[in-house]
Picture 1 (cartoon, one colour):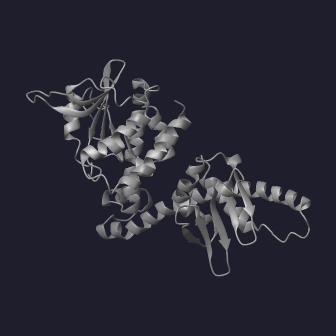
Picture 2: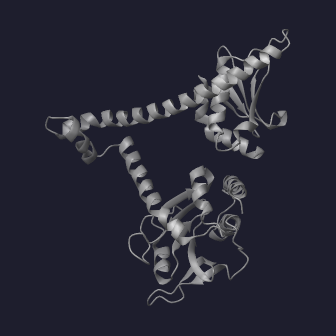
Picture 3: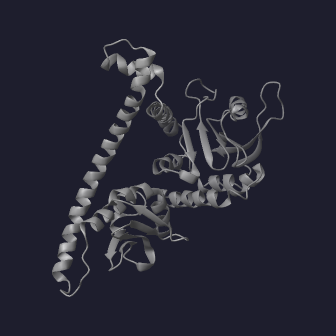
Length: 353
């Protein structure tokens, strides 16, 4: 299975999670509607009980008859154990059963899921003892491109224990580092503040000083991230605007002099933002624009039927209209602000992949 085919299947399943969330009221319904289709997308035959084993027996010590919801068998060996919960369940502190099953079998990976969130575990810290922390957590309804790449390693044709394990450690500790830094960015702990103060402040690190520096450190974090994002975005925008401005000048030279439509720098910048947003969703060559008298159109394949969103610049209001079921209107001040609607724009564009 090609990665593009797999990506398409996962994105379709992602949309399904949102659309069915109100209908799935039991664990069994969650299994049938979301969990089994997920493993089918990984190219496992969920209707073959020798490959995708339901109610797999995993006796643990004196506990007999213990059953895990599913076991995935690859090359005759149980490699993945799957414990499912109801869609509405919070998976925090729900891993105790999976922990027991993992220890009782030779499986290398354990997955805890509610059909939307999938937590992947292995035994990085102690052989045959499941780690307390997952090395990968994926939320299908808000899946990221990098996570699709990791999930692709679990497809039947690509499954390789060593390959997955090699990257699992980095995934786990990079994820934990990001989580820790995000918490410190939003609400720095006293210990974290004192750690920084040790290098930047010569006075006594009293509680009053710690409290005084708490908002300063949070602000510093925010500014670093903002400056890096703006720098990268600015470079991408400048290059795209330059390329599109050159194309526009070429078109103007060949255009009818009576044509009154003028593509403005703001419109070109908006198109540049659109290309940045869609860079991992649609091939760049397929993304084009058409400038109309009343709005600026972002299209796929230069087709009027495949417009993603339309941009309106008015004296008192700037807004975009998405090509979704509601033709959603979203306000913005400057073209860069369109980045705030990246997820919605990507979702619209996915229908044209």
